[in-house]
Length: 209
Ligand SMILES: [Zn+2]
Image 1: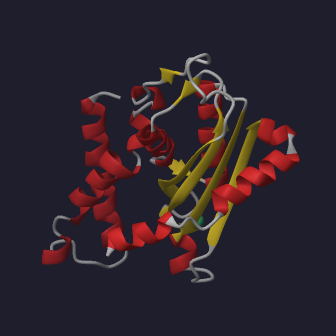
Image 2: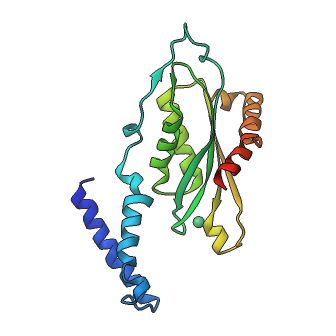
Image 3: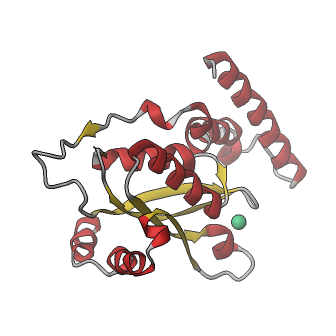
């Protein structure tokens, strides 16, 4: 999408946010709100829905695994704790958490940070978690052509936290392709690794303090 079109979109959203504030009885000229419409418009267009203006392939640089010289082929690769950020299309509120991926490479493997980039492109759109999980799994499956792929997404939906049940409920969605779809025991073995509490999570807690 052109720069002009995005600027136009921002301007229009800014007007709508100003109108929204007026409808709920706010004084849009008061100090705290004066710059809110512009700030909210920028946040939506440049961040929350930036995925509409990008394609996952913009971020992908694969490298091939040579079957002869490498042991990678045919073994399980697990990528855990890839951040997920998205917007629930039912309430326009964020949901966030982590994705865990298991795959059995044939020719292609993908650098760690690329998983985060790809998930981000699909995440920065209006979503429901079920569709986000399927879209990411389908994209990775087409890209990597693995023998099998398993994607587990664990999130907290702020729409459940601030309204309705008012509890931080976890939502877990699973997508399986290839060998993980066909072989139940392989799937449950991978699933237990993906969902196991990692001893590294202690490391993450320490780092976040
Ligand atoms: Zn929701």
